[in-house]
Length: 311
Image 1 (cartoon, rainbow, N blue to C red):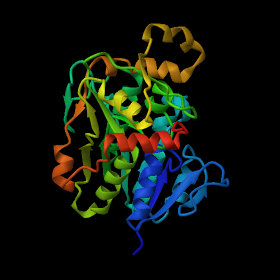
Image 2: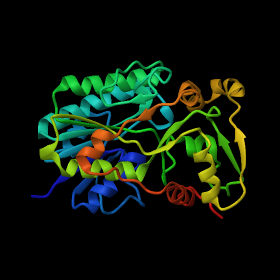
Image 3: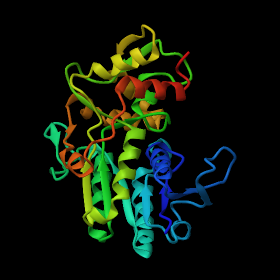
């Protein structure tokens, strides 16, 4: 039988890379978009609809074995009003098809000051609004009773811009890299996750559905920058030129924040740059045998090329 997966957010970062990895493993993949348009991946069976409309999600999910819920409001807009209703629609669709519901997770569920190393079962005590919503999403998924898969990872980066620190706060997409802005505090480690690697991990996990517990949680370690300097240096190395290093002027950001909702969300995440949160991936490695891992400079070179930032 054909394995069919519906990916909500298939035009985005983690959704798009998970769709690509599933296709490579022989899955049929459907995607839900608000409007069909030229340029969409022709290998994906696109359905027109809105993740906020339950009927659209149920129709697109008919007959699927897996549903990847990787959809987010663009630019962090209306998170508190849209995120949980969209998840409820995916839960209903998963129940209707007895499908596995896969949710990309983040480090924002944790208190960065109190959780230097996070295991999948570590206490979740978020100190931000976004983290509280993430915690609520996972709690709702757990209480719903659907077969679920949560894969938490650090800050995403990759060939798709999206809501990424790399493309929104560290470089200027579309221009050669002459300057790398570092949001981190000196000496503080930070977790990074290359989107194609995360997508591959999701695909490998979904390939082994029969071995997964009903409610499965894993951590994806990705690339750990031990002191906050390795990742910016790797950006410069990938760019192939002597890019200048600069610190992010956090004190000045609130001046522009009232006029920029994305900037307000980035400011809220500052504690994760002041304190390290490293994800313990031992359960993932034990299950898969290894964690998919692209070499750091290679992954950044591919990302910069896609972002139009390589000469």
